[in-house]
Length: 70
Image (tube, rainbow, N blue to C red; front, top):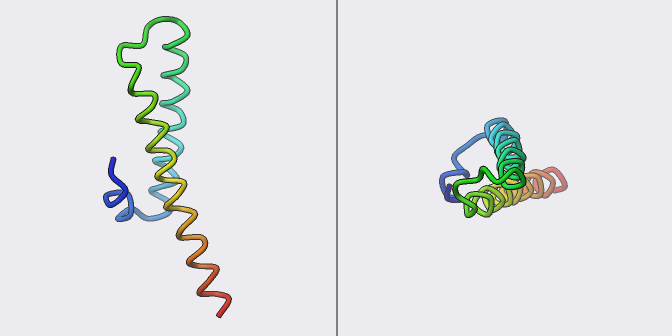
């Protein structure tokens, strides 16, 4: 998922998406250990999506802090 698409989501939606992606990453890692993983590149893609969401949430947190401090 692209960052521009993620920026259209609310914080609650991003947090839910983050939770879902973390669960998916857990399941993918479990599949990799048991040898059932069909697409190993999916793990990398999920990690990047998690990082994108966390970055957007942090940007919003800092922007809110900056507006509140003025």
